[in-house]
Length: 112
Length: 109
Image (tube, rainbow over all chains, first blue to last red; front, top):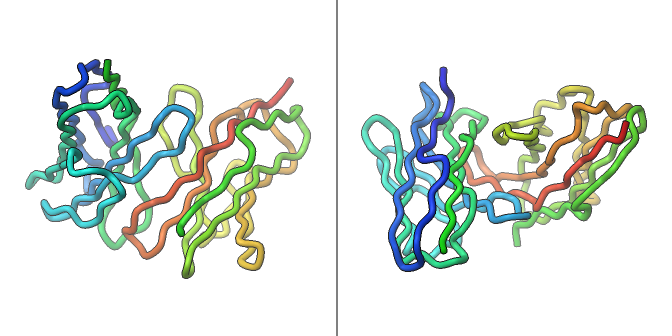
């Protein structure tokens, strides 16, 4: 079992561009949550997807959007990138009703 | 406000000495408390949760509701304990996790 897989591992984008990050959950998991981890900070919750719908959302602007597919994989989209969006983006999967999240290794986004 | 506070950014401890990583929280209700660990070049992983009352890798944490604290302790530090430690909480099952800013534990030889 590969656990949670995220792609790409690193990418560099220019301010104003758009980016899509991808996440495949751990086998058997049906819920995907996304977190942003800025340098020197703990992860901050962006949103959670279950049954292809956004179930919870943190304090992030509408520029941050997501999607969950029927196979439970998920995408995080960020529009109109700002320098402050530079961070490690973590995906965590879980099985609804069960305890425990499994985290991916993250995607390091640098906005220049 | 829901918040997790880890007052120490860095904690250096000699091998064999006791370790205590401090964590205080603010939450209206009865949260579930966790400690997550991230070893060098590895992904974030759950170390322990208060509800299970386990001891993992020699670490324990006691929830003190009166002081709203959930400090992580280990009686004898080992070099392999060097890592980044995050205290975290969540509400109901499946709820989002709120993390502290983390404490880097450095075990000195």
